[in-house]
Amino acid sequence: MQGARIIVVEDEEDIRELIEYHLGREGFQVTGAGDGKRGLEMILREVPDLVLLDLMLPGMDGLEICRTMRSSETAAHVPVLMVTAKAEEADVVLGLGLGADGYISKPFRPRELVARVKAALRGKQRVESTNEDAEPLVRGPLRMDPVRHKVFMEEAELNLTATEFKLLWTLARRPGRVYGRDDLMEASRGDAGVALDRAVDAHIRSVRKKLGAHRDMIETVRSMGYRFTEAPV
Image (cartoon, rainbow, N blue to C red; front, side, top):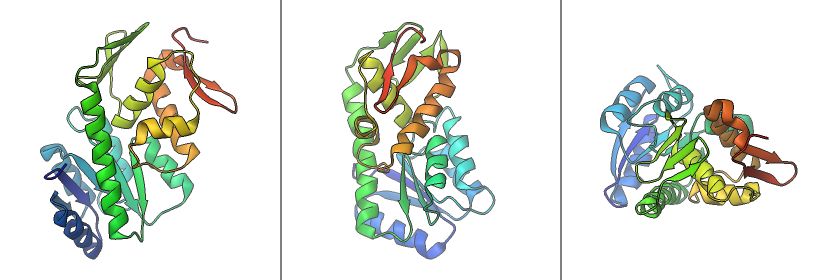
């Protein structure tokens, strides 16, 4: 974890320097950008281990950066933590639906920031370690390769974020089992996510959209959660 490369995209210089200082003290390699376009260029060029992303930015806002990252071949799986003063639930859900992995609201305590970053990186390492020797998972037309972190539907590759991959992997490993939102949050977030039921719903909506015609493989179980079914219902 020490030495992990982090890019901070934040237009308020004092906040950006504060983040860089505290993460640098922990041994992380931190680079900052003050506007959205420059930040995105850095992310796509350097492909860091994690991105801290403000929502309101000049040039290009954080949501557009997140959307572009998730459609990128190189940066699609980089964890993204949103750092923003907009703490409304709707903004959180919107960001998560676009592929962000977690949320930190301003003002924040430096200790909380460092803890969230470490938790997100631990979650990334845990997935990589768990998947290292795992066999590909095949469920009907769906194939998941945990080593290469790739998902295919009828040979077409789906561009899932790290959080979306973990959610789908959790559900697809045990078809028919119902997972509550708390179970899915714990399985997918690596302790770095937001304790918000609708966060899981936003991620599930995004996964279903990417599954396309096979979206019904993820079934909603009313008042309970979700389950995976190989045959559309």
